[in-house]
Amino acid sequence: MMKNNIFTIILIVLLSFQATAQEILTKKEALKITLEHNYGIKIANNNVVVAKNNTTVFNTKHLPTVSASSGANYRSDNQTITRQDNSVTEVDGAVTKSYNASVNLNYTIFDGLGRKYNYQLLKETYNLSELQAKETIENTYLQLFTLYFQIARLSENNNNLKEALNISKRRLKRAKYKQEYGQSTKLELLNAEVDVNNDSIALINSKQQYLNAKRSLNVILGKQKGVDFEVETDVTFNQISNFNVLLNKAKAKNVLLKKTEKNLAISEFNIKINKASYLPKIGFSTSYGWNKSQNPATSFLAQSSSNGFNAGLNLSWNIFDGGSTKTRIANSKIALENQQILLNQQNQTIENNLKNTWSLYNNKLFVLKAQEKNVISSQNNFDRTKERYNLGQVTSIEFRQAQINLINSKTAYNNTKFDAKLIELQLLQLTGELLNTEI
Image 1 (cartoon, rainbow, N blue to C red):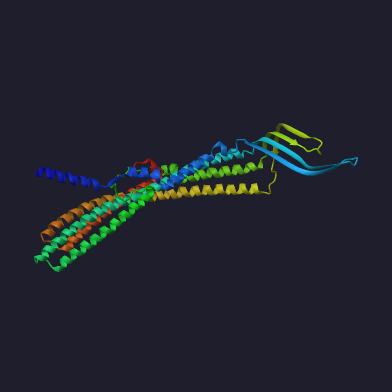
Image 2: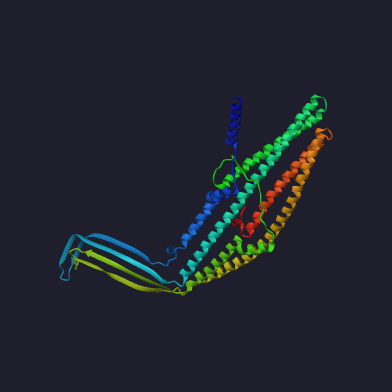
């Protein structure tokens, strides 16, 4: 009977643990949710669809236009007719009816190659919209993992603060016992109480930041998951060891440079489109029409009808338009020059940013190794100080200092670990490899 009761208690404990266990939001799952639900990414993808629609043949004026028209007219007049022999005929309510219908086709045979260059411009605009969408995804990617790693950082820091609070509570309990038995002063008890309060406040503030970061992450995800989830706290670094390789990738794949190159191509097509205004335009039109009219008695013809085809060619040439085309071409050339200047500036800026980020990244990795050693040393120092404190060989102030040193070293290690990972992601963004690399 006793064994059954013990088994039941264990089962209840296990079930309650599973019920309260929080869901783990992995890095891959967070990225998947963001790509599917993030508002900014949805808008960027819709803009790509719009740009793609604009490149279809229906938007390039390469197809003819066809229209149909029809009409009916009714007219009632009081008419008086005087003939050459002075005879007069009067008709009240003389009715005239007319009907018409036609189908018309118009086609531009030649427009100075404007359609051709406009179509190429639309294709470049579509390519530009894809790059803009990629840029939006990259920026959202960085925002996502900035918050994700912030939550991971706070999660680990919370664990350290909880551990520190438990140590301080045990110290307070020990101080109370010593006070009761007259083995310590009131000052030691008060110091222990202050430290418990400070550790509690630090933990509460950190938990609040933790919840705030989770809510902010939900905005990036574009899907409300509440705050009842945990994140992965492990970090792995990619092997990035050659700066020249990074620089070559940045020049070939950086999305900002690729966007400027597309704008450069668009500016070139704008010049060609404007130059097309110097050339003549040739058009073709044809129609099939039907007309019928019913005339009153005062008319020579009682009724008439006609139907048939009509076709023609037309040529128009704007020989001089007051100089507006010349002005547009001049401004388009300046826009092209500005894009080239911008491209040169961006190349220099990105190379400089890459050097700074590369240097900072290596510095963080070096500091991370040093802080890892600091954590080990601080832990050993704390363990020894704790033993001596329990034996009454060190004061509570020395014990507290060892505890603070341990907390600070762990916090510094966590901060550097996640900072280094975010800098690595910035390096990958500069090289255009952010979306192609495992986190």
